[in-house]
Image (cartoon, rainbow, N blue to C red; front, side, top):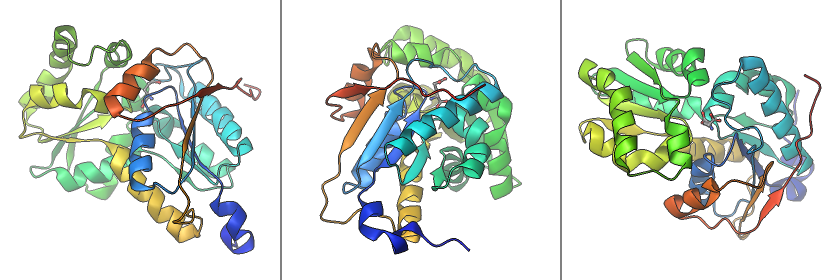
Length: 282
Ligand code: DGL
């Protein structure tokens, strides 16, 4: 029988931060949604900028990286781990859930739920990194939620570097988007899942390209809703009177993308800490 931590140490648990991680900076889209929806919560975010991107790596490497970064968040006192990275959610979530003794929330389930709720014609498109698409994680969850929904999936490996370069509204990015999306748009999708934490930064240009008949879905807001409900169910929400904060640590300091994301998301990043990855044996 497990006793909720909050029943034993209520004040200690409630003051602990929510640990959020991504392979890099893109997960700040999720952190921004958490800040907006849960302003009383402290958030400790780690971006694994020393090893980004995860999206072209093997399942075992992504799993190991995710365990290492989660361990670092637990060392910061995290009361929950939010995997704000689609690739890590697709490949490492079962292992994290098995090994960690705090609630673990990924972004695939919330994104899939939003897609199933949004589609009217039952045909959903998913764009993501190569590793996420190859894992078929979105298809699996969408089909469990609603077996009659058809999914068209497309890996878009060139989008992350373009976004990191800050080319959010640029003819080159539009050209690449067309190359990736034309087939699924022609097939008749009416909903498009932005299955990578970077892609919400392209929301405007993607929306302009596919037109407003196609609903764009990302997991950030739905993930924040799920975090809220788990915090409440576990009794580990921060006190309403607390003013929450966002602290950011990176495993490599060189990310120019941080400023791109800060501007595009309208969040205040403040001082960024540097953390060395605590490796576990491969
Ligand atoms: N954060 C990753 C994701 O959401 C994108 C960047 C990467 O490939 O690491 O899939």
